[in-house]
Image (cartoon, rainbow, N blue to C red; front, top):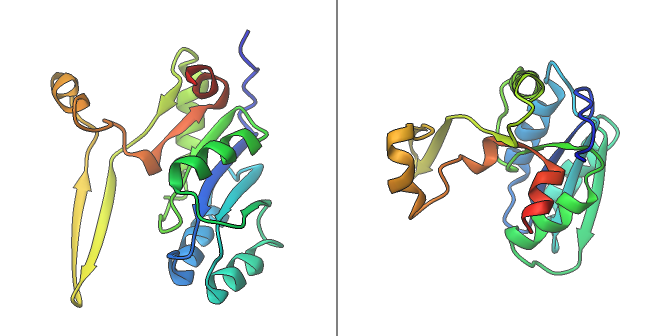
Length: 177
């Protein structure tokens, strides 16, 4: 039997590490403050030591957001950080966010609504807009979700979901191993 979905209770899962820029993290956390459906908890996995300004930034938001810190003394990589963060999340619905992401204000509301209306769906994601800054030049690209006809071809080489846009059911991910 699957856990009951409580649409008001979502967890956000984010990992930070030595390379996390404080300015990016601040923008990310501000976007979480702006959600029309706020998260019940934000699990921040601290994957090894942080730069002083990143640690300061994170501490500034601890009183403004329901942040639950999960610190590790050494950097173990994103996969292990997210695995341990997943276990630490208390809610069935988990929204993934990268520390340099800006979530649109209605992201969680739209994803929760979709998950509740489509109870057989385990994971939902979206297109994303990526911004690259290289040598003082900024470029943007939109990474779309592949069409059904492209899925089997693209699944051979990459995950068809844009990882930092997903919301998923914790119990279903854990059952996959």
